[in-house]
Amino acid sequence: MKRYISKEDNKYYTYMLDILNAIGGRNLNYNWLINNIEAYPLIKSIEDKISGEYLIMSNNELLELLEREDFQWVWGVFSAISPIYSQEEILKYKLPSIAALDNASIQHPLAEIEIVAFDSSYVQITCKDEKIADMFFEKYRLSKQQ
Image: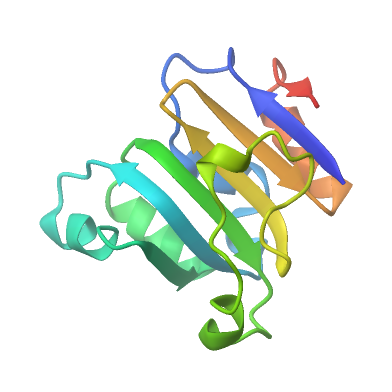
């Protein structure tokens, strides 16, 4: 497992389209559990979609949403989970928390990747597959490994 924190690569954090494209974009095969959301898209339908306690969407659905409007995520935990798991299976577990970031592992037991947007000040990525973490580092060269 590998973790990077990027605090100095960008003037503003976090734009998820750039991050997802850096780690594989459309080649990723996950469903995304997204929670602890604070974001302010201008498109009303997107605002409505992300306004709940959590959101589960496929990688392609998330990319399509972000391609419609690449807005800033102030807060959010993005957990990449294999599509073999149903929504019911995913929700059997406690939702990840921004408050639990000191933990050196991925919070959701079914997740392969965890990306955290933290108060617009940095982004943290933790990956079981170190190749994906290294792809992130290739794009965000000022990141620090944790």
